[in-house]
Image 1 (cartoon, rainbow, N blue to C red):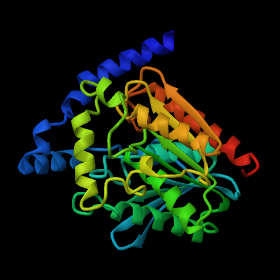
Image 2 (cartoon, rainbow, N blue to C red):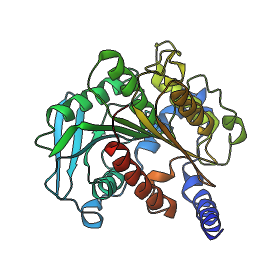
Image 3 (cartoon, rainbow, N blue to C red):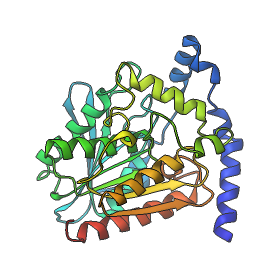
Length: 319
């Protein structure tokens, strides 16, 4: 009960402060000038830059792996080989950088004992689908090829992402399955944005007043899709005809998230397709809470739990 009360207090405080400041202007859906201003303002947001002092890890370095694509790698203490975790940030495909989830990546490197690759992919609307997916897939291939210098084990390769990053993790898993490489052991999808048709009932239930707005979700898709068919499964994994043969999965959703239902439906479809899936719904929480360690005590609790779940899952025999 105390945990629920604390979560409710933190959520209310966030919505009164940062949540109100970041409110989406619905006019951006129809007015290009407002849309451009919104994207510029959103990208100007500050992310924590003191990760090195708050959560130090053994070695951190940055690499340009392709034109316009940069990664930041985190190697934990210990001799290894460590699990190899490739992380894709959120931001609705239109914002985000290496600092956005730097603390998250450091936390996972420390708690899961994993070598983490944090990916700075190209953003929409300047670079529409499939640019971000191509960059993320290239990052996974790069991570696999450089596993030795990362003290990592390619047999324990994980893709993970939050929100739009969850979309990219799911899409990378589908693309890797269809291509027959690289071999991904586990996908971790946090508050994933998966359905371009926006069919989840939670999008109506939590359309307004819960940080992420339904109109904002529509805007994100409009910026990312471009000329691609909306039912392309690499754009919108919810449209994939078959999820058979995909990696094991951990899917985390939040009770008050407009995207909750599409994440849970996807988890159920994975399970029905024969994939081992662990599903969790965080009570009373908002979209994207996991990336806001300073705002929500739930973030540390669930990052720790996810780290433990990843380690345990990777120790299980393959499907």
